[in-house]
Structure formats: C-alpha cells, structure tokens
Length: 78
Image (cartoon, rainbow, N blue to C red; front, side, top):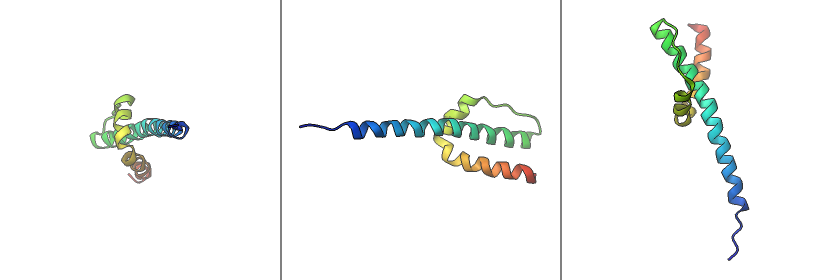
C-alpha cells in the first residue's frame, strides 16, 4: 500500500493561508467596525486592541468584511 501524501499536504498550506487572511483581514475589519460604531453612538473616541478583534475576526470575518465596506460607505452619509 503506497499512499501519496503530496496532494493532502498541499491543501494544508491553502487552509493555513485562508486562516491567516481571515485572522488579519477579519481582525482589521472587526476593529474598524467596532471602533467606528462605538465612537458614533458614544460620541467619544473608542480604541479597541487588535488581538481580541483578530480572534473575533477569525470566526466573524465573513460578516465583518462586508460590514466594514458598508460602514465605510455609511461614514460619508452620517
């Protein structure tokens, strides 16, 4: 039984790249959305640290990336 592991090892790198992109881009977008809307509603500048947002962006990145685009557009309207 000869198993070819080259195909499965290549997909592991792709998964890590997608997790890294989701961690960084999702974290940046989560931080932007939370800081913008918190500052808007509290009327005081709010600063949120990156790493908790990056951890949340790892799971919520699919939601916060489009929400960051919506927030950017709404920032011109408000």
